[in-house]
Length: 97
Image (cartoon, rainbow, N blue to C red; front, side, top):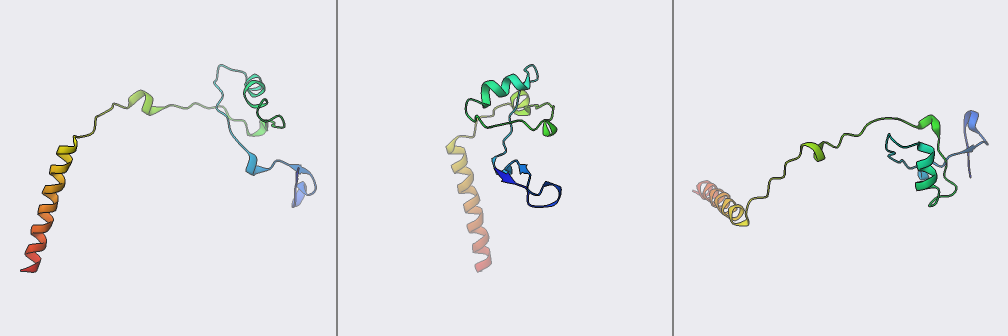
């Protein structure tokens, strides 16, 4: 148990913030039922601070809008690297003159 050190909370039990965790509960599901089923079996002393409970939406943009583009072939990348290296060597040669 962690006891408060300052102000109004001095000597009163407080939550240990280093143990705090969050859960994403589906909107169609009851929070308490989810907590009892998914959390309590693994952490029997866990509890919910309902003052910090938030309701919101998560929109996974990657799942809805991402279009996979396969990477370029290694041969293409190799050719580009050789061209850039040749360009750098030419520029260095001009500096040496």
